[in-house]
Length: 139
Image (cartoon, rainbow, N blue to C red; front, side, top):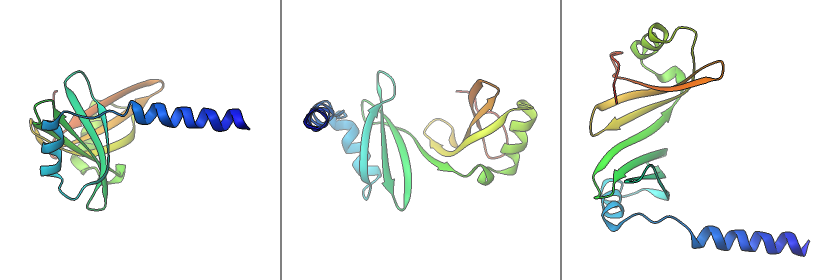
């Protein structure tokens, strides 16, 4: 029992010691855009991109920022049934036989409002993105 307790203490120390902290520019941009956000947790989304997951106005969101603080996107997970009909139809048309496993409503600096879906067919998985009218978004 003492070994388990000691292991838990060591793991807690390691996780707090190596907590990921974004650059000041990223923190300031986040705090400015999401003034009332709570429970923000940070991670890296590539070499120069930071992602925060947090609660905001009753929703669980994630937001990505470049190292210089530029906002890139904000994702809000939605029910698959909340995808616009045109998006669902486009997925069925472009990916026949694929099942939607997750959906997000995403506001991006590059494309504006888009809908992203994780889709699966057998063991193959993809993430696809569409505008609200069903037009494909190419990243």
